[in-house]
Length: 200
Image (tube, rainbow, N blue to C red):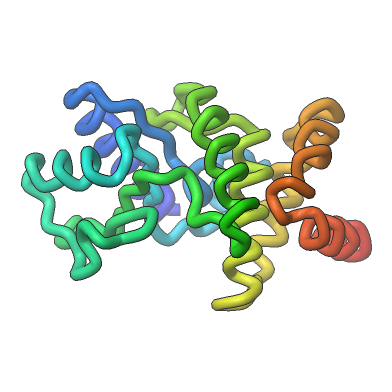
């Protein structure tokens, strides 16, 4: 419980820091997912994934200007940078809304969609901006594809997606499903839905 409270407080703090610089932000995955659970403390979130508008060059320059030290990938990072020395909570600042999918053509379509959809955020009681359910359903499925091929998919990712589906409408699910083929996620989406149906 204490860690999640700290995470929310830190997410709100970084939200305000970037807002003071005139940048829109959105918390991705962890803390944004946790708030949808029946009890937010059922889900342990490890770090803060914060999307900041502006693109790579602009965001990297801004975090340096703000006095943050970056990890060794720094300006060459493909979609996010790790801020160093942030205390008890690790912080990743994302300049792309997603790490993307494997096909470069599908990835271009995915990124265009997510860049539009991430602008539809809401300020939540925890003090940060959270993206739409449609954004989360697409972005997190793409994230699962990366996990499937690189790190493996854990129970937390399955439960997160189940919770997202519970908070979505029929219209949102239909819209997302209609786009998965063009994002290279249709087969993974089908397999994931089968597993969720069988288990949950």
